[in-house]
Length: 483
Length: 71
Image (tube, rainbow over all chains, first blue to last red; front, side, top):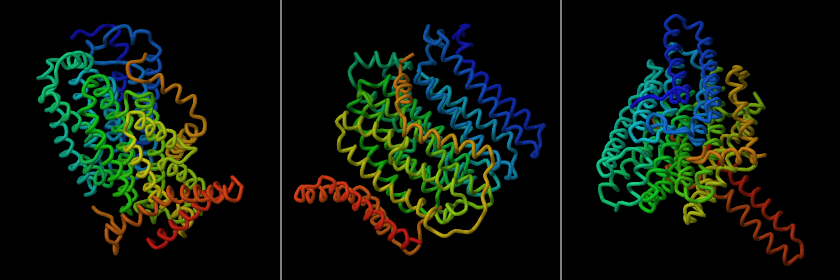
């Protein structure tokens, strides 16, 4: 494979981000714990420059001129949308980590470098148009994620979370790789467009179907869909809270991007086969995620199960990818989900960093009396997660449920509505604790970085909910294959 | 690393939580349709919305009762 001059230009965000990660790693050797906030500041600057480079690449005519990296890398609007979304999640995570990581007795420089490396992996993932490039990128992201999960290595829960994540992640990677090998064995190609072409004219074999099912299983693990969700609650509970917030949005969003691209571009011919599996998995995910969340009193575990349920909702869009609202709904929902879920976790961090651990629902007792703005913002996120208008969550759910109806899965849409109704109980439980329960009179004042992150999330959640037209219009131009 | 509340069986916790959540859907819907039926008889269309509002209020009352019990 020979790199063309335009390839360097189009890969500049990834190359810059890799250099940024290495720089942070090198600087962390020289900067002590006391100056670690500067590294966080530097990480945000690097991520901001990456956003500028992405904008530059997005406006470059070279990106649609020909194949990039011999066709292994694609830079359509779909990839760009997910890159911006991933970047947003990493920036929010860095902002949310400053005080939290600073208070912990572990070096912060490596932490920020690992976040940046995870971002590089996700960038390559969402641009992958070849099964091997997608797999390698996924592993780059996963390896950094395992370390991040166990970053608080002196704490047994964090170590347990990392070990569980690593073992189950390695298992799912093996399943995914086996599936990819079967697909390659039957088609003789790895490019998604080539696969679609070959499968379009060739008959269906059992080996092909098995390969596709295994690929699907590997990816469903990454998005934590039932029955591949078992790692989620323990990892979310044990990992440092900003890392949990990041896991609940960044890697999930990237995994959705490749799930959608692989099955939308590579395997549309087998929609009837994988569609049935995805439908059953989506139903089980929505039901189990919400029902299990009802049982939780630990907030992080509750949000873990909630995120499982949300993975089920987003699968409705993948299922109805041939309908008008299918992929569009996935984009809208993932944007909304990133904002509202990170925002909710931001509030959990907000309480933790002030020496007041938001471990249980009871820890939110009386938050409205102690800090009314924080309680109101949390309420916005909870309403959005529940899918209540006028919030982003409602718009996303509306699109996804409509896609399921249009695709002929009305029964699934009914399950989704009922599951959403069940979720109201555990979201309102937190709201009731904040507004109607007496709590410990602890004064709270958040760090500026975290406050900025939460405000961005709240503004986005409300903006998409109140005036969605402009955002929806932009997202419609980000469907796969559009430039 | 389970965090289930003590003293309640999993099944009853799931049943109560599900019922309380479903009430937010069923309450306003039932209230709306009952209000519409009453409204048709009384010749006032607004009764449907009043019924829906009462259904929602009933859902919240039910929710707060359960939430208070969970404390």
